[in-house]
Amino acid sequence: MNKLEKPVPAGRVSRLSRLGVMATSVAGGMLAEGARRLAKGNIPSVPEMLLTPANARRITDELSRLRGAAMKVGQLLSMDAGDIIPPALAEILARLRNDAISMPMSQLVAVLEKEWGTDWSKYFSRFTFTPSAAASIGQVHRAVTVDGLSLAIKVQYPGVKESIDSDIDNVAALLRVSGLLPASIDIKSILNEAKQQLHAEADYKKEQDWLACYAGNLGTDTNFLMPRPYTQLTTQNVLAMTWVEGDPVESLVNEPASLRNRVAKELFELALKEIFEFGALQTDPNFANYRFNREAQKIVLLDFGATRNFPKHIAAGYRNLMRAALARDRKKMHDAATEIGYFTVEMSQQQVDVVMDLFEMACEPLCHVGPYDFGASTLPKRMHDAGMALAMDRDFWHTPPIDALFLHRKLAGIYLLAARLKASLDVGSLDSIQALIKTIGSK
Figure 1: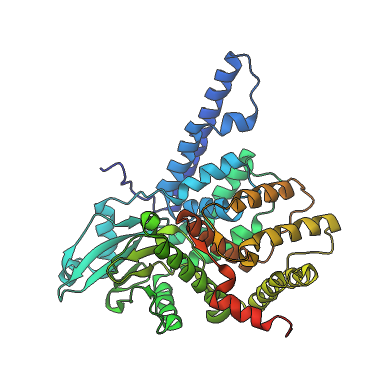
Figure 2: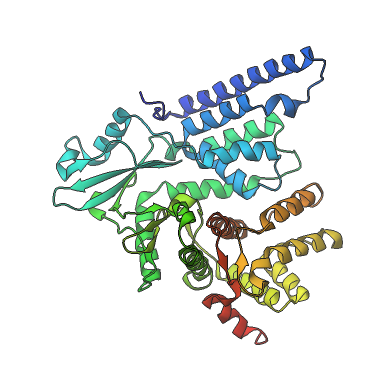
């Protein structure tokens, strides 16, 4: 078996046993590290024994083997709670965003036979068994139908859907018991939302509907390409759609600045349209979900399983927040943040002021006069440092509305992609921002 192929544990008992193996292995690694440090005359702390490179590999390898919710909860925590968990743990969990271990062909064929019947090959003139992509919920294969249509076939890992709730609870318990997550941090709302989101992502019929909905929202926008659903072969566990060619968007890093800047501009514009016009947000900003078709010179949009309706009242709050930031009106920014749900009556004025400082910092590209150099900016580090300082105040912890967290995740992902492309962009000149500017003073 290829080292990048491992069977996906399908039953709840087998999945729980894999977590037990991980816990035992990590505990053994801790004892070995502790003995090593004691032999050198050092008294090791629990984090020092736990967060070793070897244990990092054990944790990520096992969560990657489980895939599904076990892998996804690590991804969510690494992105959504990155400022409140220990940096070493954040580094461990961040590896999960890039791990790609596929299931072996025997398991893949079993899934296809269950979904399409034992004679499923009759639909295709060619089916590539080596996946073109593997992620937390499923893997993608390229196929050509008997009438010559090139398709992308996304196949869900067996047992993933049924294990979502138990996987998330088990992994969260392991992280808590390990001491890696401080007891004062309440991640219950994030985990509950993760369960709901993953149940939605595991319904490929629903993702098919989102594909059609999003294409309708784009309408005649000629800047983007995206797959079309192929309903004849789509089931709850297999999603069939047209294949769209594209190179990794990061491959544009050596292209002329004009192209890199255009791609960043179009992605920022699209995100703003999702929030303020579409009312539907694709919440997974993984770089792999954006590709570039060089022939058409267009951005390819992929993976709509994590799309969610974006509430109008939250969008209105962010509209007011951005208006106030553009007007340099801190009082109205505070009012908008309160409207969104960032502040509680229990928070001290000092805590409120720190959060407001973070908002002003986050709006730096928006308020910058002229092109903002994302590649040279130190904003991510400054935001991280400020967030960590705030997180040290354990009386502060307050989870904003989950829709706000997903929005932050989306915008942060686009920002990081612009930084990876070394793009320079006059954010204030974007059409969506200009529309906001025209409304300043009207409300």
